[in-house]
Length: 285
Image (cartoon, rainbow, N blue to C red; front, side, top):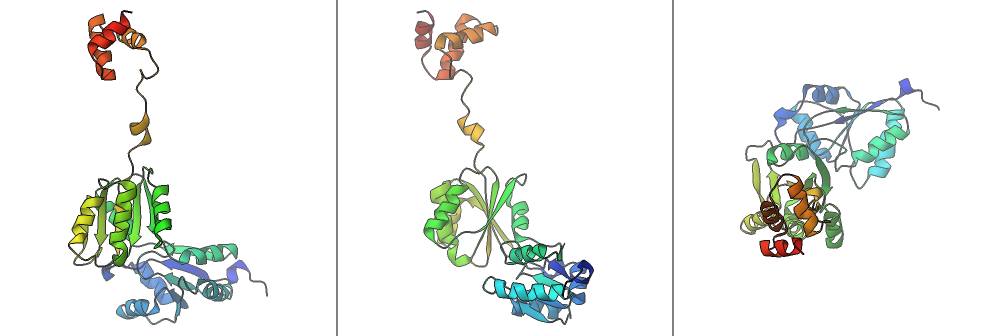
């Protein structure tokens, strides 16, 4: 049977609260009430959310370990004209979430996908971090494998974007140790947990400062780690204008700009961090 575009259903990517249930949107509630099925990363957690808002809908699990078979099942229902909402445990689906694969599957099969915007933990942590928000890169979860983790960190070591990572509490210390080894302990960092909740906590410090902090306190809850970007390469590597000049050419440039010979020699010596006598002797050879 060939399905026409108008016969197909729509996949709704519904952002749900990351902590405070008051952050759910009216549109999200409207969609959850209207769809034929809700695909959830954790059906037990989503059932609590639906019950809180007195919504009764069929649920199906869709997570990292069943995304291939369950993705095909969800696609088949969409092709039959069913409307389906996909939700993650919290926040926006398809970000560090198997919803990414479901979106691709729908696009490949000409099924309409739309988003119902809402909270994103990484963005909330970024805007609260005090670090630059002009340019940033979302890096998600680091590998539990030490070699892969170091490869990932080394690949972004010189990135000038602010970097955003997610991390589980039991891996936080080892991740901070890896970051210290690769980025250096003085790199600024912000660690966010319990976002939008009563006990929201943002720690703004350095990587080594965070290591010291959590050496005395057990990490609790899921973390968003926001790391300052590397210094601009130009700031670190740009050569001074005189780097290809001889000392005589260096002094003559300052003289051509109106300096006296004495002041030009003094300025060139300061630029090169050498004694004035050395520049004087070289200039008068």
